[in-house]
Structures are given as C-alpha cells and as structure tokens.
Image (cartoon, rainbow, N blue to C red; front, top):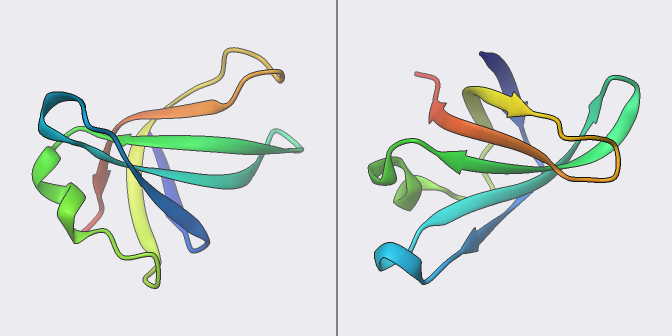
Length: 79
C-alpha cells in the first residue's frame, strides 16, 4: 500500500456502471514525473471529491513501464 497526498488534480467522470469518478494527477515516481490515474475502491467516496481540497489517499500503485500512466487501484481516503 502506498500513502499519497494529492493537492493538484482533476476529477474525471465515466458513464459506465452508473458513472464513476476518478482522479488524474502527476507525481514524481522513482525519479521521473509521471501521470497517475487514481481509481477508488468504494464508489461512496467518489462524490466527496473537490478539486480545491488536498486528498490523503492509500492505495496500490501499478507501474507497467515508463511509457504508460501509473495506476492506483483500490484507493481510499485516509481519515
């Protein structure tokens, strides 16, 4: 599990499965600036997203290589 504080991010929305919110941001990961897509484990946390507030998140980061975006799966808000 990775803990992360995200301050500069965009909330994106899908239309599948009744609609989901996810986050796009950029972080430094292993010395490189990389784009990160954050997917939440619990849909009930998605409506609380506000691009003006920093988020404390915990999740699993998947790195498929420098040419791909990083993915954080099973993310949840840290209380």
